[in-house]
Image 1 (cartoon, rainbow, N blue to C red):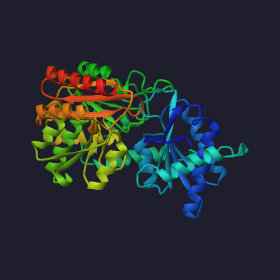
Image 2 (image 1 turned 60 degrees about the horizontal axis):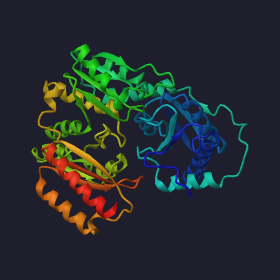
Image 3 (image 1 turned 45 degrees about the horizontal axis):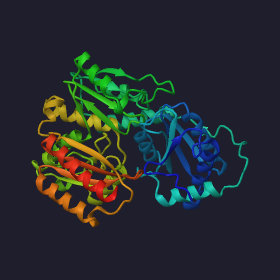
Image 4 (image 1 turned 45 degrees about the vertical axis):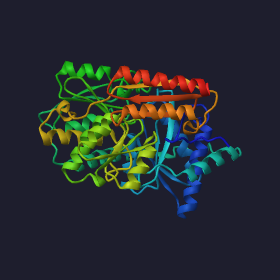
Length: 448
């Protein structure tokens, strides 16, 4: 049976299996059936979407399917992913459904399902939905009309903004000028309201979604326009969200990029200063720069690394009861506030830190230096464990000895292609390039 759910829900081209209307209705049916059996009553679902033109009909199709099995669906309409997660818990819904493909282009879409705890749908339920899709016999549910109730959507959006305002009720930004890149996505209406409410002088770009321009040359994947706008406006601060605003990247007053690693560095110190950094540790993935690890070590903070993916970061945060974790991409999680990355919440935390310390964003990032990095891809004919190939093991150990704590070697296979990836970070770009190509040659000779 084909696996339809990935690490971030179900995603693909809108209108094409599994994101065609019939299959989406089937997903709604299956979820309603499973929750009815589990709860012994009619389940209630809250659904939200980003600004893609396909979001409306996908939400409707899902809810027609769910309603055919007696579930009740309500809509928050256009809202961020963390907004749906908040509403699910706050208003006692049994599940929250997000229609979004995050940073993907507009023709893609996806379905993410959250439990009231903020965790994504468990794997057993995902497998049951997949099985139901592939075993489903044709039924006509077209008599189910207008199953999606959007009467309270404005109330739900306001409740989410009020929650964020309440979490930072003492924050004032009256002397701060900020530029917000909304990615023409889910934050387009919400983010300007939120930050103006704290007194900030807000300049918005890419906040006019038309169904097709989400993430197009804007947002957290395309920061050049934001960097230029911060300089042009002589702003103190810039932030770019992605399509569903579960991540945020920043630009300092000099126009420099401040990524997720730099954000973790600042947040770790902020939490440590307030005695709230549990275990004196921060969770990040194997892709976080060695510079973050070295900077944190200078403050006696340990960096705990996981596999790539916010799912694995969250697992480690929960397992270690740590206070903050995230990825270079700007997906930051504060598990004691929410189990979902929230770009607007991260921005408020960062602004709170700047105001408290009376520092600029560039001053706040001092102490963290990004080490030079090189990534070399090597075509391989087979994927043997690296540690079981003597030549590769010996060459790797030699490089690690040369790096001696001032750099890092990461050797892994691509999950989708016949490639070995050699990533090295170190103080000297020329040296790490020589090391990477040397190791790549060994791998090519043995496995190519």
